[in-house]
Amino acid sequence: MRRLSAAIIIAVVASCALAHASERVSIIQLIANPALYHGKKVIVSGFLNIEFEGTAIYLHRDDYTYSHYSNGLWCSINETRYGKYNKRYVVMEGVFNREMKGHLGLWSGSIENIERVWEPHTSAKRGK
Image 1 (cartoon, one colour):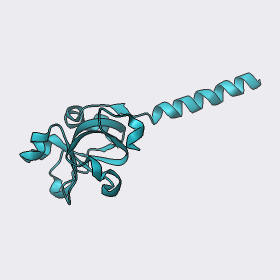
Image 2 (cartoon, rainbow, N blue to C red; image 1 turned 30 degrees about the horizontal axis):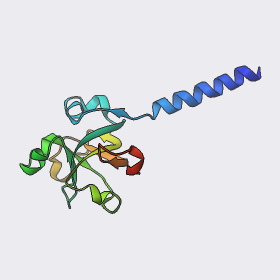
Image 3 (cartoon, rainbow, N blue to C red; image 1 turned 180 degrees about the horizontal axis):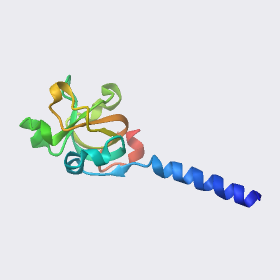
């Protein structure tokens, strides 16, 4: 009986962990299939710009430079904590929201509740 109870507890804990696991996706996937990822934890990579009413992660630096807002995602980010990543290519983990499109609704969605940001060539633990 104890073995069965322990097995059930392990199965429940494992399923909860999987339900909250982040999925690595591209910005293109989020833009093309927003309903599929809405409300899910995701890991994306791109060029991060941090500025008043314009904080976003873009597919490429040129998308930021030439104001191709639709190729980016608005970011609700703590500037104090992650400001050192401004104007750099980063990897970001957070929750995708297809409905929040940032200042003036210019972006193709947003990344909220950002848990980590790090540079692609470094360990994810350094981004905490």
